[in-house]
Length: 217
Image (cartoon, rainbow, N blue to C red):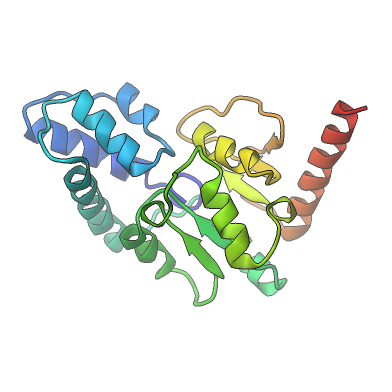
């Protein structure tokens, strides 16, 4: 979600700077970029380990979420082509699931800004035992949709997210944004969601299947 559908990474980075600086520390974008796509508990522990913040990991997450949600409620910064692709999928009768390491409170703020029924399922970081890059979030999404993971398509913007989807056996489309995404077996890269259609998603996953077959011959 963050960085794929909505450009909220600047909101997160701003919130990280704020809570660290309020504790008398100094934060930097190098640290912030290491947290992109991570499970929030992992990110909170990283902040504790690299700053004078004395809050518990859960308190850090709650502080971050509160600040980000305020900004999202004021303005949802959609990534180019994101809403249009979701609308096209809905019109085509293709069910979609939102798989995000943000917690339910933030996911709901984003989902509320979309037409009802855009997502058939929403999997959030506070509702799984293991966050990305573990495959559990994508297995949970596939179960919620009533399909096999291999029959889904994942769209991710971070190395962590791509690893999670690929580990679950989901054909993955990487749309790098804040941080580069290394070339990964099981994933194909596109520069943007702008102009992508459900047919394009099918073509890209077919390309992945062809690459996989070629790699095993």
